[in-house]
Every structure is written in C-alpha cells, then in structure tokens.
Amino acid sequence: MNLDFSQIVPYIPFILEGIWVTLKFVIISIIVGFILGTILALCKISRIKALNWFGDLYTSIFRGTPLILQLMLIYFAIPQLTGYDISPFLSSILAFGLNSSAYVSEIIRAGIQAVDKGQTEAAQALGVPYRLMMKDLILPQALKNILPALMNEFITLTKESAIVSTIGYLDLMRRAQVVGADTYRNFEPLIFVGLIYWVLVMVLTLAGKRFERRLKYSD
Image 1: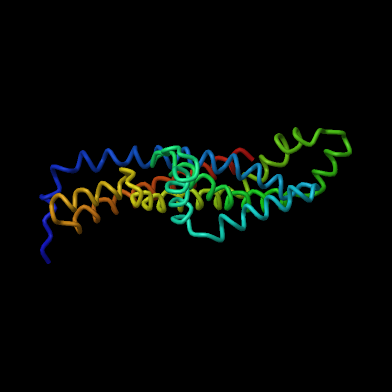
Image 2: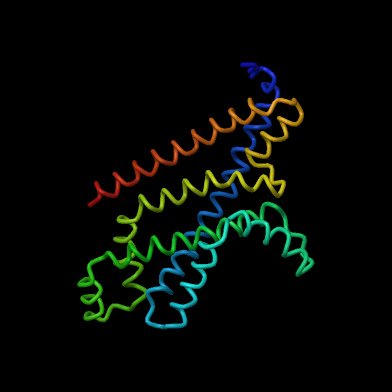
C-alpha cells in the first residue's frame, strides 16, 4: 500500500479552511429549512384545504427528486431563465434549505400531532389565540419529542453538503479534489477530509444528545 500523507501536509491549512466554508452554508440552510419547515407543517395541519394541498405538493416535489438535481436546477436554471448570475454559495443555501424544509415539515407535523389533543381543546376553550397556543404550548412540547429526528436531519444535511463540490463551491470535498489534482494523490486528501466529516458528525451527535438530556432535566 503506497500511502504518503506527508504529501498533503502543506495543504492542510487550505483544507481546514473548508470547515468554516462548509459549516457556514450548512448552518444557514438549517435555519432556512427549520423556519420554512415549521410554516409548511402548520400549512399541513391547517383547516384550509388549499394550504394542505400546497404543503403536500411542496413536500412531494422536494422529497421525490434528488437533492443534486435541485442544486443543479437552481445553479444553472436561474441564470438561464432570469439572467441573474447566482453564486454557488447562494445556490447551495437555496437547494439545501428548500430540500430540508420538506423533511423538517413532516417531522414537525408528526410532533405537533403527537401532543395530547386535550391541551389544544383546553386552550381553545379558554380562548387562547391560535398563534399563542402554537408558540407557547404546542410547539415547545413537540420540539422535545422530535429533537432526535431533527438532529438526524441536520446530520444528514452536513454529510450531504459534499455534493456542492459539483458546482465549484470550495467546501471540504472540493478542496480535497483540488489537493488531489495538484499532488496527483487523491486517496490521502479524501481520507483526511473524510475524517473531518466524521468528527463534525460526532460533535453534532454529542451536542444533540446533551441538549436532549437538558430538556429532559428541565421537565
């Protein structure tokens, strides 16, 4: 086995810069996905049929097509259709945020519907406005129930972030490819970047478990 990690040592700072580049768009995508997912979940449980249909159609489209296809459509179709030269960074946020919101909406919807209906009925009987009931009563309880599923979605998003390398975004994966092309050694930078992804996922997993324990302790 001909492995020589010393060849990539000069490139380690360049690769490590990709951690923040990757996390920057992943964090923003998670925020976008959570906000849109919450709105979609409320649409799905609404008594207005048009909102139900919109939420179901949106989820069907984004869950029924590959994420890389959505990324390519946003990156290549927007300039062609609108003339706006969208950046790889913005394309990545839009694709991952919109895609994640479809999955998050299903998670939140299930969490809301798992809350005891008696609490909703009691709040309605007391005349609590729908917005306040959701914000102060239902959603906080639902969050505790769906936290593991949400963390799993965020971890999946972090791992799938590697596909943005296909549009030239200088994330961890793309930097590994650049180093491989420069040194003519692809295996070593890919292994090094794979280790970084593993560490990121482990940190997210441990943070999620700790946050979950704190929520249980607060009960």
